[in-house]
Length: 289
Image (cartoon, rainbow, N blue to C red):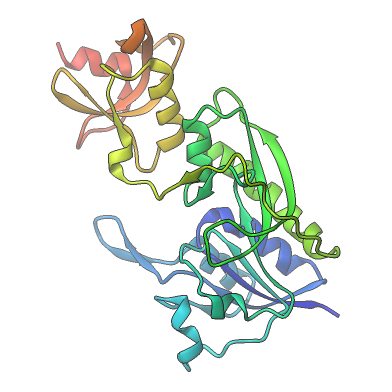
């Protein structure tokens, strides 16, 4: 008999997990919960989340509450009685009455090796910190953020030039496979270690301020690999704000050097002025003459 599942997720990172559950006859996804459609771009056109788009493609029922914790009192969303509640990058904190819904367990797929990088931006912070490995943790959810017992964990190295986009593409596939394997086996939760805890918050544009006067080339290069495209990295050069799209620690055919702290040099590969197209470092430099 298939295990019934409510799935909560929003971005592209969550889609492989939803697809894996929907494709496996061991599971019956009875409801997909995702964030409401949001306005995007200058036209403010309402765009469905990647998870909603995937759910519609898979012909699965979708709910989009503004606040998931109000769903029990909202007759618009009849709540199934699932065996598992699966949460992958949903974007809201779940109350205890939601976590109590599943008969077996509320389970989360988290993109780090817990307890390192509990919180909203674990992939970005792993790159920012210069970590050489990360991974996926399958955990039982608690009301406190990413503190629940660990069900499974799988590691992957962080390459010296890996970006957040590349790492997330790898981790979401690892997470989907590990999730299905974990749920089909007896659950054996293990408490998280009490040492090695780090916490990361939701990112904002302020996190993308690069300051060559006080930051080394390595630090700014990690920022670019971690924070592009969101929240992006901005650097002031000769009083002018410049978006850093791609950088390197060695010169390329079209890059220009940027002196940084401690005698280090960052090489600007692709940059962008406000209101203009992205261009190579050398193209931008020629435009300044």
